[in-house]
Length: 331
Image: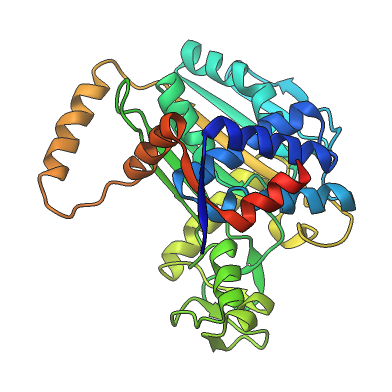
């Protein structure tokens, strides 16, 4: 697979131009492009530049509105509600961002409840921004619609992959700790990649359309994913559903139209909690990090991606050449 090295700003300009060429307004293209290029630079390619075309297809079909004007509603001192108006969600989140940050500063915590949007891709993008740019701890949950995952013990689709992200700041100039994962056994991006490559799935990942366990990725796409960790993963998926759909007013995953076909908006939800940590948190965290990192092989999530992002912003990063040429052709 041939790769080329591009600068962060070059990739951002190309992504923004490609999104605009497919019907996104300048503001939507800029907000969405920042998220996609950040994911690509971190190495999270399943929700990186490939999504230029996912979003483009949605804009062309009407599943997402490129000219949507988000409506920001300040409900309480701590809670800001946002109607994304069937648009890409990144601009809606950016419009509410100042209120979220101000609430966390004034009240100790801020909540953002976004509804009626298109799926947002990488949740870690929002969590990392809050931690590294604003020094806040963050919990982010999303239901992307439609349902693709069964409940514990069931075979019918009830949940989407229902991802969850969490981040804590580790101090100026150092990457935040960031967890960003689906509550399903695998993300949809991973499942599609396995199906395209013709690879078998590990056992316990999915069911076929008849509800039988399968290792065939194509059968899994037509059937149901399973939650990670059995009932425990299903419980976390339920929590995400309540936060991202129930409390925001978004579509339940089981009722949401597909994000990749048809003309109806998935009406997805996004829930963000931002918390101002106590003074001295960074010192306590660094003591903890030192203790964990003294164990050879111990993994701390988000640090490697944060370092990759820092490198990409200063020295560029590698992109699949074929993908880059497709993006540039639109731009």
